[in-house]
Length: 612
Image (cartoon, rainbow, N blue to C red):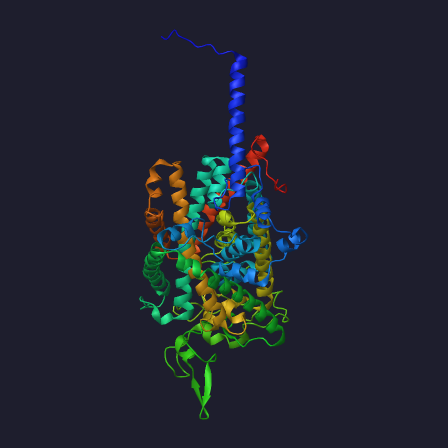
């Protein structure tokens, strides 16, 4: 045990500490002045007590007698400035551009222009929120749940994301917003435990979102663009669904491998196409609204064939009648052959076919037709039910012969309210897209809350207005026809669009393709960030990657989890899984905000005050 002690008087000790502090402070001040004076381009470390946006603005006008024009220059960007920002528009997560820059050692250091609220937060959020469900499932949800219940579903989901965005805004404005996206923002603000919990849910949600977008891409390709490209064909009646699922698995696996290679080789290619994918989404939505206006003047001609009150699939016949006149002779049609055992008028026919008339109605009667009243209420059904028109005369026959082989339009899944909520919810996710670019924003504390809340308000308006417009323009049986079999295999939203259904088909194909690529780009980086924080020990291996930091192992795991979603092969089955992960992620964000507020922790002082 040591016995020699050096006794330092308290005053002397205090004096030494004071002088040391004074020296350190003077040295820091001198360095600060040197940095300010020299133009060597070395950026100062941002302090939590200094607003970085104000510092940047100060540097911009330093040494220039432009005090009079400061406000104007700051608030009114020129057209060339806007075009330049659009040219640099990106929707990939933080760190991707830096990794790409490292790869090319010859490239000179280029300072990326700092993004504002519109380019940096609003557009990426808009692009991520509007997606595959709007084009492929929203009409079906409106037809099944009715306009009123669909409105409730959409309002409930949009309210959920709006509340989460408000909580996220409070977290984002609590101190300096770190670069590195929403995970860094939450973990650095609330601690690694909360950050890890939110991050893992967000990672799994983003990965399954990739699977959902890929399945959506294949569904558009094989159902609406090129049905002949299917590898597996239905040999017998009733095997169509199984053949389609197998096609989804094969094509999905090929696409996931292709996309993983693209992401591995270089994200700059994904980055360059971001503006194209955004344009596809916006043009498709404009086409829907233009089509709605056109139905008021001149509704499109999409006749629907009904037998009694049952909807018939037009894939297997051309003329919607039992008999046709040819050379002054009455002959039976292809439709007759589908229900009877021969083409003769005296043939033995299906009981229901004999007792009911074949009629044609307009699939899109238009916004002024009053069809909205018929579409107000829900029509939930069992799996394998026939899609029937309400208030249409029908005589029920004895169903001795099985209806499975008949050319009716059948429902493919059992429907009820909560199933539709699960399928719809992924279409409101994507609110974290703005905060993922936090390091590239001019003023993240201002841009993240404003841009995210504006994007959610815009998309909520689009979804809610689409529900009312779909219900007011399209016949109920067409809305409930998920794959457009009654309208010659067209995409149902496409039949409403102007100038052509192909605008929506091509637009939705490219936007889902792009969204899948962006999911595969963002998810591995998120996993890499969580792994490097060392919160979950067994995933630390995924923190390693290529020499430039590209997350190779994390990309492999992401592709493997994505493959699980693709093997499920059904968009309607993958969407509820995705909903659960995002709901858990949003729950943690709201819980973190609530707990911090209730505990009144000293480090919880958000500038955004409109949270509860």
